[in-house]
Length: 227
Image (cartoon, rainbow, N blue to C red):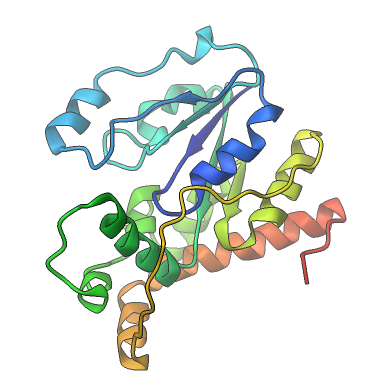
């Protein structure tokens, strides 16, 4: 079985993949269009894909497969339909993710003409769009997400690792956080936070779904969330 990890940016995907990498047959294989790729680069990347049939069993393929032409359902849809691979992803509290994205851009020197409040005001359900379910009804969205073998939650990283280890029959591993961006103090007003929530209702619904699903799976495996 091949495991295809759709890494949503700024959701802790690098940390998650690095920690669970020893569970898989070979060091994880990247499937990337590059950092902040242009539309032209994305289109070029979409023209070729990995031949999953040539990979050893229990290989982890990892990439930012979040654009229309590159999402796993488009890029590797035939493998998914034939049940030759299992789809993984990771989500994060939408506001925390937006704040992390802001400080990541500051850290890597990407130009920003906005302060934090202005930057997060531009967010409109990016996780839903990247997952490919932003235009679905609530029922359709749940059915879409149920196709994922496992959805990790960055905010509950250790529980996510424990549950996936149990599902795969692998030894428990300890959480390690990587690629974190230093943050200065920030102060968002209740009104700014409320407006962010109103613009990102679908992302919050996805996050709530993922948390509830994680806890259900943990209960099934007899794993207690950290207190």
